[in-house]
Length: 163
Figure (cartoon, rainbow, N blue to C red):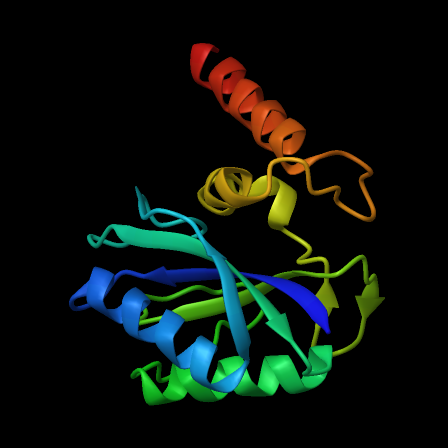
């Protein structure tokens, strides 16, 4: 069994209900949901939109391989109304987005999947809910805890905003 941390986001429709339904589908199809963060409302990241995001992180215990997990999460996204994935980091509004953040201590890079998520340490909207449920979890590449990464990014944003 593997522990996978998944980032969930939505900025269209009934965002909270969609994240609750997505969490239920993950429990049904992916594995046991062991931890669920609270909800975090954030501005869009990487693109302009009039719609705010609602985000959360879940930890699931799964028998699925990383690639099978990716397939399952993409199928859930599709069923929840997502019409297109981001291509070359051109982001758009979405009913639901599921990102594989971490999968045990696995480090992998393939054309379809990068674990840990390559932008994990740059996204406060992921780090804050992840730190809520797993503050002592160590990023397998950066060798820092999630709490440390979150704190570092908050300081960085504070310093940038003061300039």
